[in-house]
Length: 110
Image 1 (tube, rainbow, N blue to C red):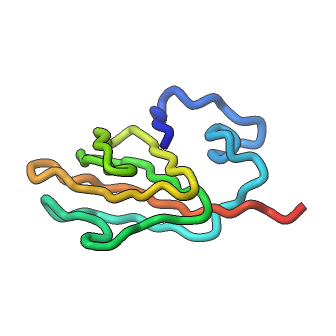
Image 2 (image 1 turned 180 degrees about the horizontal axis):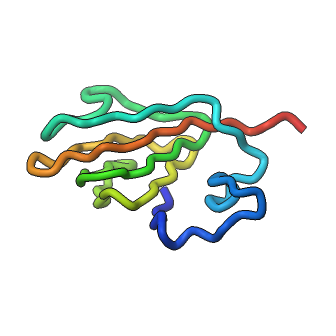
């Protein structure tokens, strides 16, 4: 897992988020916006991992990101990059639940 601030990312030559996250050679294949309910847990009760990286961009609110059993704070203005094979879950704050963008990426064919 890697954590970034939206405000401290280096400007990429091609104005793309992926090179700024050291994901050159990847492309976004799907994504969406999720507005969490207070205390909501993503993928509750299941092991949740991917073979490719996944990007979470906090828009507003707060959450705890569980990665391989460790807790990390996550809030609007932050980006979390989940590495392949890392088990992860979002746990929304009960008082100020997070709204986030999630992006699945895959390596492009050469």
